[in-house]
Length: 300
Image 1 (cartoon, rainbow, N blue to C red):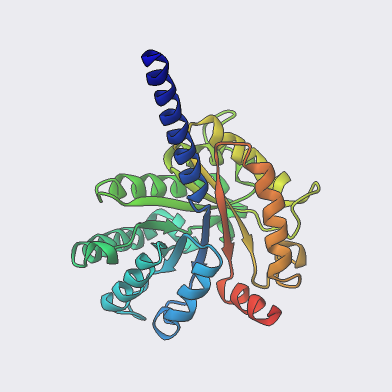
Image 2: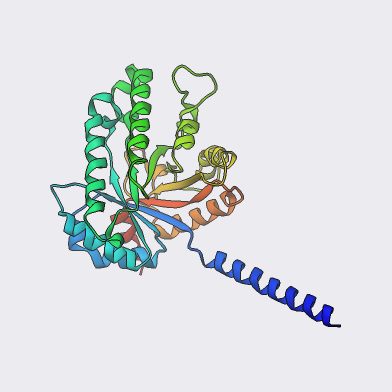
């Protein structure tokens, strides 16, 4: 009898632990990122930005770092306030030209500045990582000498990681277009740039700019291959699906600007239900923060 009671007690305890773990897992917020390129707004509209971000479930803000538009104290105030809301802030930096070897010094300047900044502020005021938006495929040279541009871009990305690894507790993530898995690494066979990036960066944000989840030209169709690649590489890899809320030069199908935030949220939910079957799917991100916020305000 005593043995049965001991066994029953152990079973109850195990069940309670399993329920607790499951509850905690459900309480973990889903990853939701957003870009803030207009740096001065973090000073003039800090409360509105952070209040909206918290309400919308944003977990990560990619905040553009520029030394001529904000002081270190301004970044510290914003990041400190975000930390109180459990929102991580990453330093956002990049330019298409930074994919070229002769522009590498700009990358080095960002790495040095973030390292110095983090060293001189309180822990809760530090950047959680650096988010790189370097898109050399927007340069004219991409059409005339793609292999050379690719070699220099990948070399600069290796530089980012080697230098970034020297900065403890900082993650490095990167933005990529949804078609990147169709571009081959120069000099290799059956080795695409998407795989190359995923092997090096633990988190990749795929700019999957379409305004519908389903269909041959939809978010799911364009993003699934990279999600599968991230899944195959192991649990530490994370592929974030990014969508656009700002007007786009690529046409209406590349943005939710006309449809509004409610349609965007619906399509992201459809996308997430399909993608969450894969361990490599890490969450979603919304580009065009001011338009996202305006769309939400207008719908109230």
